Image (cartoon, rainbow, N blue to C red):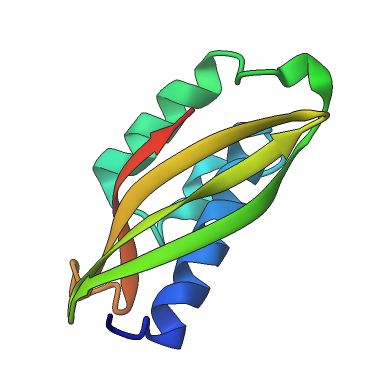
Length: 113
């Protein structure tokens, strides 16, 4: 098993916290651009236009973020967030240096439940 680089883990955790804040409308989707690709940001904007699961339960909070290192340039991310007494899931993929103008790890695919 390969050790996940600290910067990949930190990027994944930061990205998922930002994601939840955008879904809760505490931040704008424009603030995602350093950590998400444009197609993923468009997906998130679509999610924001519809009420998120369990919205009536209150604000969401990230509970866990896991990173499974796949190669020197990619990793899978998955985890959970809570809203009141309920737990929801997310999963996705991060890749390193997808865009040379945006160095570091970037979310390239995402699924939010």
